[in-house]
Image 1 (cartoon, helix red, strand yellow):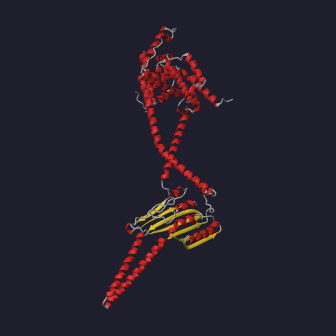
Image 2: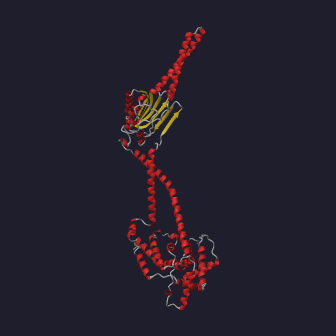
Image 3: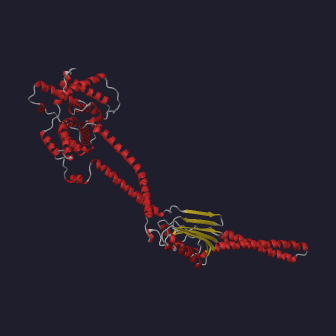
Length: 168
Length: 422
């Protein structure tokens, strides 16, 4: 038996939420760099997506890209709000979160990557997050940033190169 | 701030190859061509560094998603009462448009009270000593009392120079467009003895079987007022009829005559005219006086004449003077007749309703034709209001669009700046 329309929409949104929530949080966290703020923004992103789900147009991109578009706007709005109220306080990395049981070599390697990510330009860090955490294609990233696909590819390549250079 | 470009320049082949390798590493595809182990390790380590959701927060968010993000308090009440999202903005736009349309309509209707009635045709002529005016009412739906009030007693002083009382009531009618003739020029040196020639054209509508009866009433009314029927023609056929009257009425009783004739049937048209012929009258009077003075002088000269030749010459001139006197007197009589007797061209048409009138306001039946006319009129007014509303809304909508675009652009710039500053 087919589900009622509202239940169908609810189920579809639930699936979208479960497939993206971790990646959205990772992306937002990469942008705002504050766990509390990232949690608030992530919750706001999905609430906004839930309220606006009837306005989603499949012709303009995938649902995943649509959610990350909302996430980007919400994250940047959070940055604006915090810029107006106080200087951005970057949450210090928690060394214990890196995994106390990891091999020393692995831990060193991950600390290097973490430091390299932290030292990236905010725009490059955002690109890394969109590519590595969000898993968006270059076309979707280009649409999200309002640039051409070639430009997006060039920027991603530049960010990866910086990251590799810093880590090496 | 990042420069936004939308060019479709081709990607550098080397960069494209490295991006393709990155895509394979992200997809976990390690097949040939082999992915650079360093890049694969970097992908693995960056992903491992992805911030993880706190379990407590995740559970809380899961619960909110399952509950459909319930609102609380006033926000919840508003969400239930007001339509949300995409539906709400059009609703506001429609409400604003309706309010603006209402305001425009009110302004149009209230300002229209002081305007002259459209369709009015007034012709006036002034040449120093004489003037004329014609007022036309193409479809004057006057009731008899209104017509009576619009036609005061003709003996009122300065009739041609002052508006006739009751004009407001004429204009207040649904289709009344009768206008009192404008004032004739001030006679000035003519000593205030104005001579005005008046005329009227009137069309009465009645039912086809009442044309003859109305025609009989017209004759009786005219005779009762001391007027005469100069000519008439009454033609009645099955299903219709028409009668024409050329009436001569005492000018002093013209207004009363129009009032009484208006009571006989529905007045479908009424036009009144006046022509100030004071100048022509004074000229004729002066010519007569000059001719008489000349004849008196000639008669005196004739008494003093001593030769036959002088007598013959004076007699010829006296005869000539007598003819001029006769012509001036005839002209003066003709002018007196024109001012003493008003001309009324009356038409009775047997194509309307009964004597009670055809309009619902006058107690008659409201025909489908009336309904159609009313409907067309309503549509005309509605279309006019719509045009005015659109004319007012288009610039406002354009400004609103500009403001919206500017706001969005400013917000976008602000977000990009915030990212740069982070």
